[in-house]
Image (cartoon, rainbow, N blue to C red):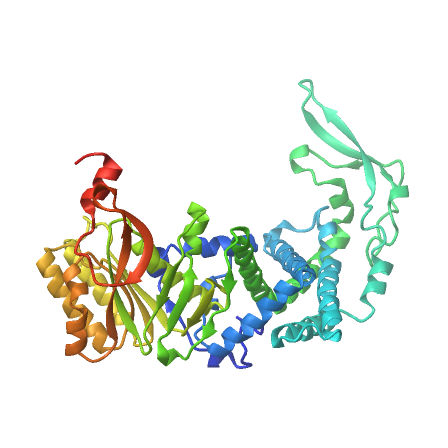
Length: 507
C-alpha cells in the first residue's frame, strides 16, 4: 500500500485489520474480491493488504473514489497507465536468455508509451486541479507523484529527442526470401535475397542501421530449424547491448512505479464493484465512521453483493447493534436467510474497511480489528477426532483470535452432539463472549439459547445479548419465509416439516 491508500506519510501508523482465508471462504468473499481485482487486470495484488481499521485512511479513500466517480475521463487515463505498466512487466519478466528479436523493436516503444500515458494522466489531473474541481488530498498528491516520476525517468525534451532518433520504428524494412526444398517439398534452406530500403529509415535507432551489405550477396540463414528471422539476424549484434540496457532501464522504472500501480488498481477494482452495483440499481453509500469503542453497526436496506451477483436478486434487511456492542442470537425457519444475513453483515464490514461504499440506503459502522467466523462444516473423516472434536477445535481457534474489537460471526458452530449438550456448551461460550465485550451474530437452531437472553443479561456484565428471528408468512402448510430478519422472541420451530413437504413433496 502506498500514498493513495494511506492518509499518513508514515504507513507504520496504520491500524491493522485481520481476516483469515477460512473466514473469507465462509463469507464467500475470496472469489468475489478476486474477480473484482481480475477485472482491473490486477490478479497479482493481494487485496487483503488494503484492509484498514484506520478511520483517517477510510476518509482519505472515500475522497479519492468519490472524485474518480465524478471524473471518468481521469479514470480512463488511470486505466491506460496501469495497462502500460502491465505490458512493461510482461516484457521484463521474459526469460533473460531470449535475447533480442524482431518483436523487440516494438518493445522499445514502451519508453514512449509509458511517457505518454503518465503525461496524459498528469495533464488531466492538472487541468481539473487548476479549475478547482479536484479537492481530495489523494488526487492532488497523485498529480505530484506522477509528475515526480516523469521528471525522474525522462528528460524535459523527451518528445523531441524521441522523434529525432526513432524515425522508421513503425515501418521496419520488408525483405525477400528464397527457400530451398527437398524432393518431398520440405523447406531445408532459406536465404535473404533483398531488403527493400525504400521502407527502411536510416534513423531507426540512435546507433544507426547496417545497410551497407553487398546487394548481390545472399544472406544464408542456414537450416530452417536454426534460422533466425532476417530482421533479427540483421540487427542482433548492434541491438543486443542496447536491448539489455533497455530491459534494465524498464525494470528500474517498474520498480519505481510499483506503489503507483498497486494503488491505482485498488481504485479500479473499487470502481468495478460500484459499476456492478449500478447495473443492479443497488444504492451504495459511504457509511458514517463511528469510533471503534462504540462497536456500532447500523445499516438500513443492506444487500449482500455476492448473493446478488449469483442470484440476480436479494432481500434487503436492516441491522442495528446497541451502543457498546451486542450479540445477536438468530433463530428461525430453515432456509429462511439466516446464513445470508450473517454473511451480509461480514461483507459490509469488509467493504467498509476497504474504504469502499456499502450496499445500503444508510449505514453507520465502527471499524473492527478483525472478523472471526466459526461455521459448521462437514465432518472430516480422515481426522482422529469426531465432528464435535473438530467443532470445538475450530471454536477454540476462533476464540483465540478474537479481541473485544473483533466482529464475531458464528453459524451453527456446534452440531456434533445432542441438543442438551449443545445448549450447555453454547451457553458457556456465549457467556464468555458476553463478558469479554464481543459483538456479532450467532446463528443457531437451539431456541433455548435465544430465549434465555434476558436471564443472561441479568446475570452477567458485558455485551448485550438479544434475539433475532426470521419473519414467516402464512400458516400451516402454506407457511413460508419472508427472508426478513427482525428483533423478536424465538418461535421454537424451524418449520422443518413444511420445508420438507415443499422441497421434497412428502409428509
